[in-house]
Length: 67
Image 1 (cartoon, rainbow, N blue to C red):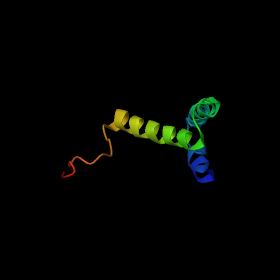
Image 2: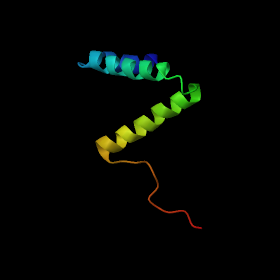
Image 3: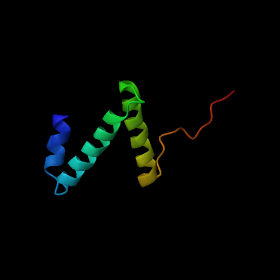
Image 4: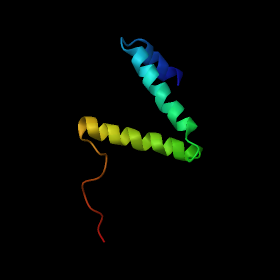
C-alpha cells in the first residue's frame, strides 16, 4: 500500500483520490452481507466494470471456447 500512496501523494488531485478510496472502503466495511473475500471480489468486479466504462476494455477473451 505504501507504494501506491507514494504514487498518489505526488499528484495534484491526491486529496480527491484518497477521499474516494476511503469512501469505497468504508462502504464495503459496513456491508455486513459480505464476508472478507466477498468484499475483495466486489472491489475486483468494480475495477473491471470501471475499466470497461472508461476504456471499453472487458479483459474477456473474444474467442469462444470449443464445445
